[in-house]
Image (cartoon, rainbow, N blue to C red; front, side, top):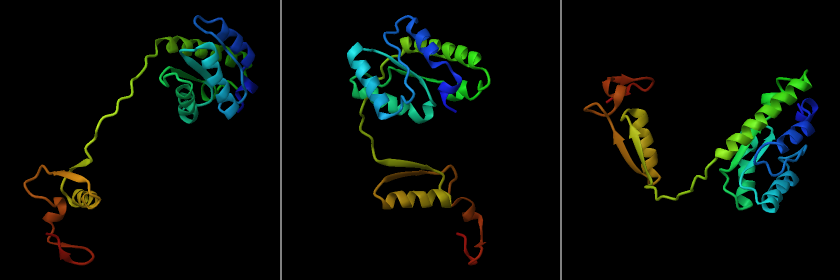
Length: 182
């Protein structure tokens, strides 16, 4: 379902322009496309934006795309807020454009208010020891430990019981080969 078929996008844009701290608001049918992303990047640079709110489709698919746009424009990707107008509005209010538009305005207002509170999250790089902790020295744990060790990964294998082998260590014979379980 196209958001614009249910929501009066121009009315939502006009409303967004009246909100505190909103520098620019635009309507675009394909914000997630390359030209839409370029428009956002150019607006960040031209208007010296310090926060970006996009009211569009699902964040599950597109949030990382927009965060990359912010980063590419020199803005922290954590200064981004996404408002989901597809699943949260156009899908559930298909038969009532006025209700959908009012809800979209409320969600955009909330997104703008939240964006004002966003803080940068510094990216830190830390050295990581290439090692694995395997909890449980049953057949699965021992097999995992062997597989990782054969790949050159340091393995710590811990077991709460005094012996390893788990349930297998308790069996005299195993099916189908009738091999010794111990």
